[in-house]
Amino acid sequence: MASSTDPQVLIQQVLHKLQLLPPERLATVEDFIDFLYQKDRDRELTQAASMTAEASFNRVWNNPEDADYDNL
Image (cartoon, rainbow, N blue to C red; front, side, top):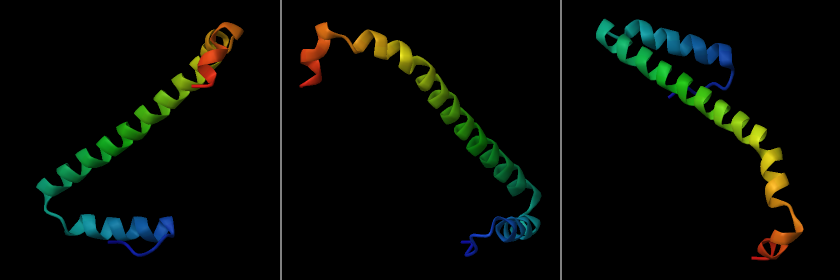
């Protein structure tokens, strides 16, 4: 495991380790990096969609008729 919290040092450590891997392992590492990137993008999109919908939901859910449910 990498011991540094400095991003530049960590990048250099990872690059060094990548240079030691055989080519078929590099493809696996690239796939994993793509997976992590996509996972982060999906999370960002989900959060953005939630924030966009929040105002609409507040208008529907925040009303006197449903106030009794707030106490549950």
